[in-house]
Length: 54
View 1 (cartoon, helix red, strand yellow):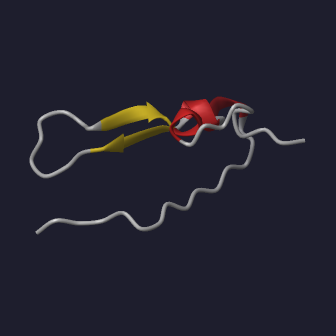
View 2 (cartoon, rainbow, N blue to C red):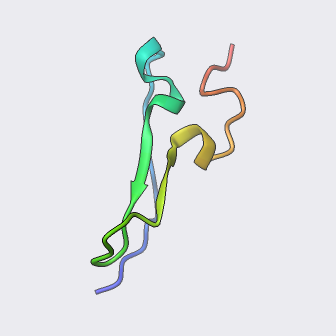
View 3 (cartoon, one colour):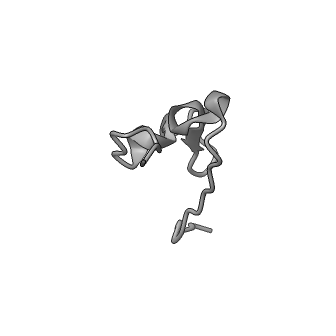
């Protein structure tokens, strides 16, 4: 049965080892052998500040 992603919620606590580019978003559809999306979270959402807003 097909599915729809309606919401993605993440929380980051500025751990230097897990900045937005240290978290990788991987999305695989159906029974695909490779993911359709495999990229850093910040890049997927166009975050040029790498999750660091000061």
